[in-house]
Image (cartoon, rainbow, N blue to C red; front, side, top):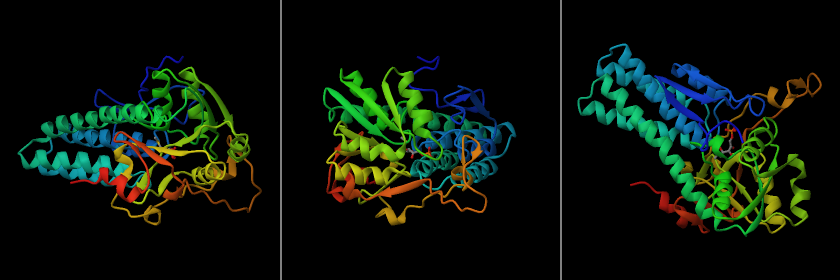
Length: 355
Ligand code: MRU
């Protein structure tokens, strides 16, 4: 067991700073990064020091609280403080395009700021109000993940073997996890779960992060190369594939870490259920289908290198989409805090329609 508490302290507020568990250093080192201003936090999000859709949302919420605190320290009048918060929101929104949780959190906290300002709040009130809202976003994420975890745990047999991709665990959320939340909840319900984790090229979120957190929590975890998933599924030992999501469209099309789509095709080919575990903040019902989801393209250098060593010859190109889209027809069910949602998704996902 690590010295870290569980749920993991992924993003926290300490004395006017946003403190992040630096995931670029795991599994070798558990170190925390202090962000004193919004540009520092944006940099941390871009280089994946904090990553995973719900965790990015929590970080962005604290980012607006950070902007409000700096405005209060500078004794800005309310209109100027509000302008600083709006500018911070634009900066944070430009960090990564795919995870809808980022935009969901920014809209929610910016809405609170606008409401407080309308009610006559000063900069200090804005700072206090936005910090309270960011803390609520973080606490609600843990609560939603615990709830969806319990719903998903009921789908697993007493002794289950699960295959997962990327890291949709405590590290990717407010601290508890979505896909791995199901696994934590299954154990809490008395079930035995062992996990196979795709290593998840190019940045190895499976090998570095999923393997680290599951081992830390005392699970048997086996890492495999992404290309070995087909052979593993053909052996017939996997009870379920469970992944997280970065954005789920109204028809169930799901953006998640690149490599999820081939895994869903393989699960279909081998008759293994393919579950996507996600909180309401990951559903984007304003987007009809996967064609409307912006897929982040990251630096080709992430593909050209392995463990800081160049692996491709000079002059060769690399293609590096960070996410892919799994068609809703390949998803057996969505595991959510509103329960297990099955096809037809146009109808079942409507529980997340706002207003
Ligand atoms: O690029 P990352 O590491 O932010 O990608 C993360 C994923 O794709 C996760 O599977 C997803 O955000 C779900 S997190 C509960």
